[in-house]
Image (cartoon, rainbow, N blue to C red; front, top):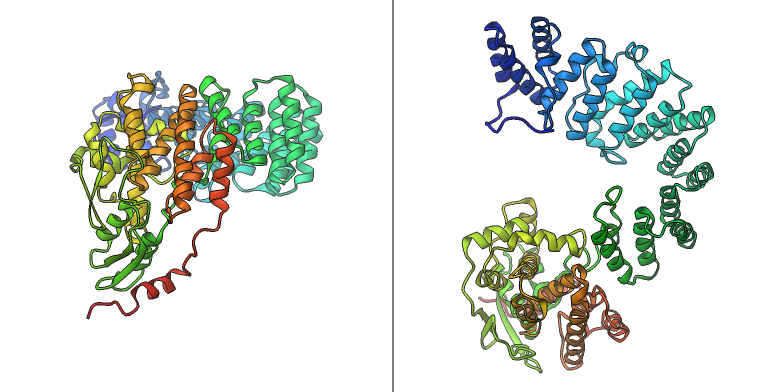
Amino acid sequence: MSEGRDDPPLSAEEELTLARLALDEGDLSHAAGHVAGALTRAPTLPEVHETLTRLAAASGGGVDLFPLHQRAFVGVVVARAHLLAATGRPDDGLELLAAATGHDPRADWAGVPWVISPELPERLDPERVARVLMQVCATVGDPVPRADRGPLSPYLVLARNAIAVHPDHGLLLGAASALARRLGEVTLAIDWASRGVRIQPSKLGEVWLGYAYRSAGRTRDALAALGRAVEHDPTDLAVYADLAGTLADNGRLDEALDWIDRALARDPTFDCAVHTAHRLRFQRDGDVAHLVALADFVRDHPDDSHEHGDLAEGCRSRPWLGQITPAAGAAVAVLRHALTEENRGHGATVRLETLEPPSAMRTVATAVPGLRVEVAAVGDPDPREPRWASDRPLWRWDGTVPAPTVPAPSAEAADRIRQLAHPAWPHPPAAYDTAVGLATLSLTDLLGLLVHPPTVPATGMGRVLAGQDPSLWVRCVQVWACLGLLHHRTDEPWPESTRRRVLVDLVWGVEDWITEAALFALVTAAWVDPLVRADVARVVAERLADAAAVARERPVPIAVSLAYLALATPGLDADTATLAGELISRPGPRRPGPLRRLWARLTRSRRRP
């Protein structure tokens, strides 16, 4: 189904004017096209339906003026639906309206008198009504957001009217329950589903009842209903997964895994059970190997029966699995607080105890140009020196002031990264796939983005980042630029590839946010390609061990983030995982108090006259 012509859209009134002119001239085909266009703009406008009625009268019914092709215009589908109903085929019309709803659930395709008429169900087969309701349910959320329920309410009115005429139809009661539940009518959903299973006991009816109870928070009743569904059909392993999910949501993880194990014993490849099993096992012990195994399963089984969200759910809001970690260190703490000050830190001087990463120092200087930063000590080992000799240093230092050594990226590269960079992603393979949009950027551009981040995009997110935490935007750019490096010259074998050489060089360069970004790109490569996992795990282990050794001598602001990256790495050895856990839980150097007190201490007696 499509949105129609490529020309600029006309308003409903303009479409109607052209339709009426075409009707007056007897050009029914063009009139039909404009009526279809008007329906897409205003599907419930009375004048549109009046013109459609005129067209039908002039053409002996009008249905043939709105033929269905392989890629039909949604306005044609809706017009044909209304004409089918008018010519005595409301069942067919409802199915087309449901198809239009699947195309755009927020449009009020069904909000017309004939759909909500109490007399309509007398002319309908209750089985087909149930199928229409199920068709609608399959294309909307569960539950539907409150703001989006209005266009779906005519279907609920249809369900009420149909049940009034066919009160003993089990399938209709169950399908109506499923729709009512999605639209927030949970009590009604329980009532209808309960009546359905009493009249016609079935697996599907019990599943609908179980879902209704679950939406109402009646977990015990939900589990009982789903258990009866299994008794009706012990071979339907999707119900096992539903039971497991319900148990897990209520803290009964061992019972949940027992149901999943029973499902996998019947079919080790059943997609719903595999997805749920890996998610719940990760929930139980936090071992990322379960999520990696799930990602491998998804890659190896692209034709699953339906889309699953278990991998995204397992990664959501977790450091580096689903989002960037916020920058750590005194410099960004000062930056965030300066942005809350009325004068945004202008005219103030802060004194840092040790030198911070160059990206942090440069972000502070760029975001708060009136703030003067002094550094008490550089620290040892010297953080201005790369951890290994570097082929392409990105920073040079003038004392404690960093400056880029590579040119700024092109305007095209800046625009491209603005479109893609975001602080969160569903899971590492999804981030990798999204970053393919950077594949055509040159190596020079990608490296330039790392140290010359463009201005934030003109979006709501961009405005929030600019006003509250510019460091997060810089980190977003660096992360996505490194993900772009993963798509650089992918024809080259991994061990000798430019992308591996550059990323490893960045990992061992100057201790910086870029270190984290490059390491995340390597970790992502390991998620999507099992053949590189041993190599990446070795690089991660060596880099974390080095950070831990340096942290014994001086503060390492990126150490905890590197530890989280290690725990996100496929195939990480046990000793490195233990070290990562210790770094995350280890009390760091004495941390300052709340930002306001930190700000006062750092700037005490040092304001310019």
